Image (cartoon, rainbow, N blue to C red; front, side):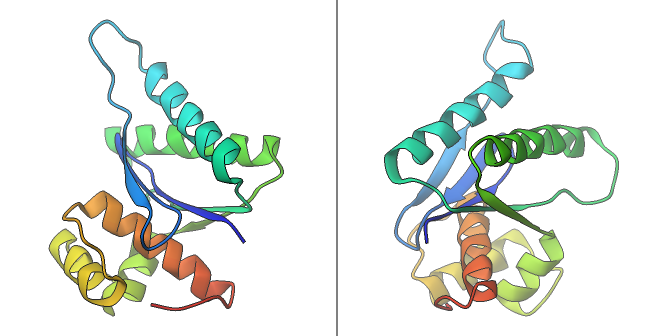
Length: 150
């Protein structure tokens, strides 16, 4: 089963295995509209789908607080869900608390804890909270699907 895990944000963490992960920079450049961030994400999803295929996409769903970043995250999630529906890909969402509790045992873990636990438990070699979160989302879905655990 081919899984893509995503931590949706302007610097969007992604992972397809514990060894293959990264960050997509979806930043809006000078003289671009807000929609370019969404088009960049759609392009990245298509690129991975065409390269390796995807059976399931898992992502972090936004917190319930209403603020500017949540609105943008919700738009990114809409692109993910639309892409999944168009390509008959299953998708699952996890709350930040679920991801943090799975990773560290604490639902309120900070970014450094998430990174440190990824280094220790998953062999993560980077130092980026977006990548670490994507790795944890990947491994949480694998656990839920009865696949290998960290």
